[in-house]
Image (cartoon, rainbow, N blue to C red):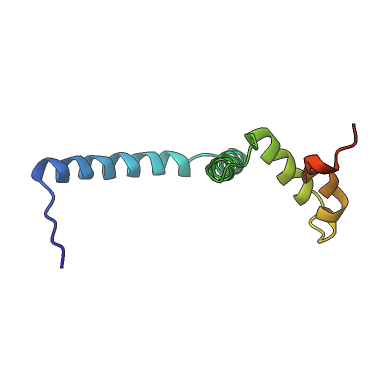
Length: 97
């Protein structure tokens, strides 16, 4: 079994961080619903963008927002099929120049 005992300095730092996160969480709770929604959407786009870049996909945050907006506009299961030509790149061996 691994045993770990954080130092007094580390404990103090973590308690300070906990206090700051609580303060920031309270500030976020006071935002109106539209602002919360906007922040949530920005965070989602940034998270998806970071994840796709880690996997060597080259999508910008703007492209991810476009895909998300396009695919969620009507919420129907056929939406992807209607827009997949704009979303899925054509393989280079199938390009006709």
